[in-house]
Amino acid sequence: MANGGLSVDTGLEGFTIRGATASDLGVILSFIRDLAEYERLLHEVVATEDSLREWLFGERRVAEVLIGEWQHRPVAFALFFHNFSTFLGKPGIYLEDLFVKPEMRGKGIGRLMLTYLAQLARERGCGRLEWSVLNWNEPAIRFYRSIGAVPMDGWTVNRLTGEALETLAGEFRPHPLRNRSRLP
Image (tube, rainbow, N blue to C red; front, side, top):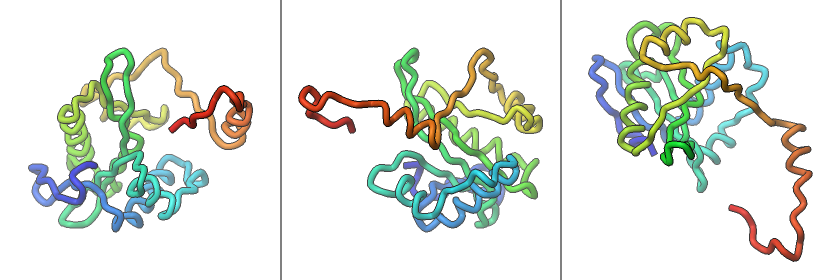
């Protein structure tokens, strides 16, 4: 996991980045809600501290969280996980969420969070650092382009969730005699 609570000096006086720990669950959930409110999607947040504990700090961890602190106060977070590029034959890092509190924007904090993630990707042998941005979020789009990020024209994100996911999953019926092993 990303430096498990140890702070990394970023070069910006007063600002450090550290890997989140289970004691940060309330802070993480607060950042998720702040981000959802900014993205006009607060009504979609169903995450709880318990669900975050299970998937971020439990037996089968599927994502990692970085906390950016200004003078020991949480002001930014990034939630990410590994994906895999079959074309590159290498893992990548997918940045699910990056959020900097509005009063802290314009200080270079978002850029530092991304440069740390880029360095982490390089250290882990990853071939990519990827993320999505809402089409209407012009300030974020300008920022991402200013650091060299390229929008992936010709690609559309697809998603199954809720009832559609349950319906499709319910269609799978393995043959009981031929399939004795379980998938992970």
